[in-house]
Image (cartoon, rainbow, N blue to C red; front, top):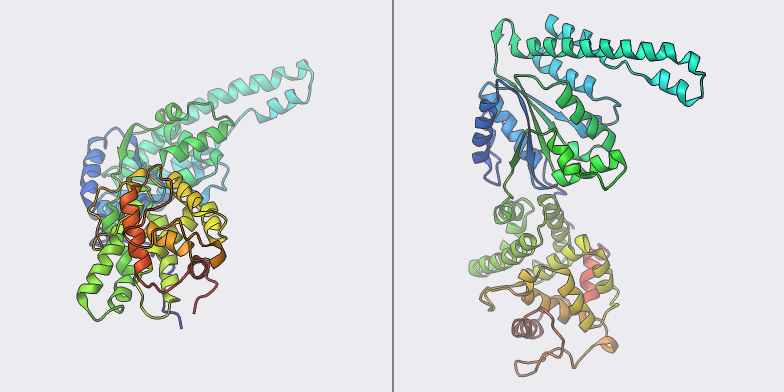
Length: 458
C-alpha cells in the first residue's frame, strides 16, 4: 500500500501577525530594503519591478511582503493579472481593485465618471476608410475624430486629477501611498500584458501610487515581441520606458530549499526507516543531499521544478520493497533526466545507445562543473560522477547480449575503455568500481525506469 504523499507545495497564505513565519529562503531581509524604496517614492509614485526567473519564489515573497506592509499600515493591493487576461482592457479591472481597497466613495464615483471618455476612438472612421468610402464622406468623421481627441485629452486630465484626490485622501485624512502589486504579468497573453503596462504608465502615473511588478524580464520581453509580431523589436529598451526602478531578487539558496523539501515530502522519515543505525541514516541523507544540491545548483533548476522532482522521486521510492536509500541518488538523477532532458531519458529507457554514446550524451547535456567536481572523492562523498558510475553499470546490465564486458572496469586494476572529452577518468573509474562491487536493489536499467514511469508501483 502506498504511503500518503503530497503532490506539491501548498499555496502560501501568510499570517498577518507573522508574515515571514514560513520564509524558507530567508528573504525577509529584502522586505526592509523594499520598504525603504517605497518610502522614498511615496510622494512621487513609481513603477518598480522585482526581477526573477519563473519558479524562483517571487509570488511567495511578494505575498509575504504584502502582509508585512499591511501590518505596518500601508495600503496594498494584490492583483493577479493572469486571472483576468481574458479582459480586453485592464483599466476597469485596475479600478475595480482600487475600489475594493479604498472604498466606493464620492471621490471614486468622480474617477469612474471620467473613464468612458477615455475609450472613445476612431474605429468608425478607420473602418469607413478601409471600406473605400468616398472622400466627401470622410471629412465629417475626421472632424469628429479631432473633436474626440480633444475630449480624450481633457478626460485624461480630469481622470488623473480625480484619481489623485481619491488615492491621496480618504475621510479627509492623509494616508500612506497605495502599493499596487500586479503579479503574473509575464504569464499573460501579449496583448493584455502590453495594455497593462500602457495603462499603468499613461493613466496611473500619479503621486501616492507605487506599482510593483514581480516579473521575469526575459518572459515579459517575449510578450512584447509577440504583441508587435517581431523578434527584432528592442523589447528590453521598450520595457525600460515603463519601469522606473528595477530590483533584482537574489537567487534562492538551493540548500535551504532542499532541507525544506526533504522534510515536507517525507524523505527524512524514509531515510530514518532505512536503517536502525543513526550514523548510516545521517550518512545516507548527507550523500543524497550532496548530489541533489549540486545537480540543481549547477543546472540552474528553479524551485517549482525542484519540487516536482521531489514529488516524482518520493513516489518512486514508495514503490520500492523496503526502505532502500542506496538507490535514491540514481533514482533522482533519472527523474531529473526525464523531467528536463526527455529525449536522453527515452534513449536510456529504450537502450538506444552504446555506453560510449551515452557518455558523450552526458558530457553534452550536463554542466562541466558537475563533470569536473573539485570535491574530495571518496565513498563518504558522493559526486555526480559517483552516481554516473551507477547509471553506466545499471545500463550495462540491461540484457546479456547488449552487455559491453570489455568497456567497464571489473576491478581497480582494469582500465576504463571509454573516450572522455570532459569527465575526469580517474574519478569515473572509482565510481564505476564502487557501483560494480556493491549489490543494489536492481540489476538493470529497465527495472529502474519502470519504477520511474510508474509501471511497477506497488
